[in-house]
Length: 296
Image (cartoon, rainbow, N blue to C red; front, side, top):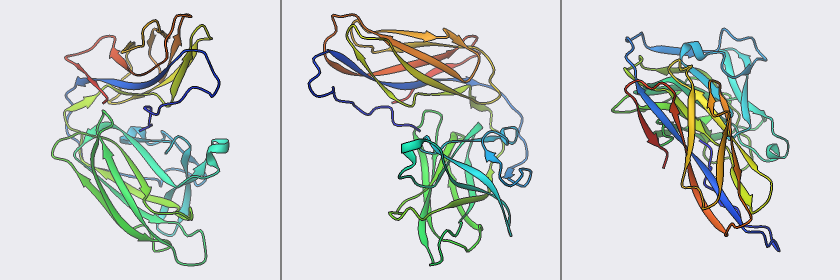
């Protein structure tokens, strides 16, 4: 999940009052009944080596999003089979210092997740580090984590497993925990998770950045990303809670059927200095026995 609670100080010498807003996401949950299916094992054999991994496997229950906003995977061929190599960074200056890592989002919630992982050799000398798997619920709260040491070049048979008492695992992050030399190159051979359980969220709502609004200045646009879950396609309407006094939030579009939206913030001249955590609430336009749950 992105850290959207970072505070930004006013620029030195600036005399403009400004409100500093960190947008948190809120997601709406639906109760949807679905039949059980066989345990899912997702591999990358169907993807051609060189393919950039994104949402090609969503029909199998998982899609991959950039880790730390910039790190993605390409498919490579190995003696064990096709492997997702999470060692590709796009983001300009953000890629000057970065670490290998994977982030996956499920289309439903699960009770366990298991990854078959390894380290791809990038240097002649032996390299060993610890890989950590963390699972998160639909609110972005950590459900559990597990870690193990892995030696580069020893294959992709190492298993890391996380279980939960309830079906609440909605996403995961796989990363290294101690790699000051930036030598880790993480590869995933397979991903396993349990059958679909009856409760699934409708979507996850995220904001990748904080925003600074100056009194009388131009409006500031904050991008919102909607990750659809459980086959959701309906409209979503938004509203903002805990805005600073005199700050106005407008959502573009007012209702989205897609995967993105924008919160536009504006303020008149009579704005005092303040820092606020604003909650953005997304609600299905036509909910079914649902409820709203805030990220905290």
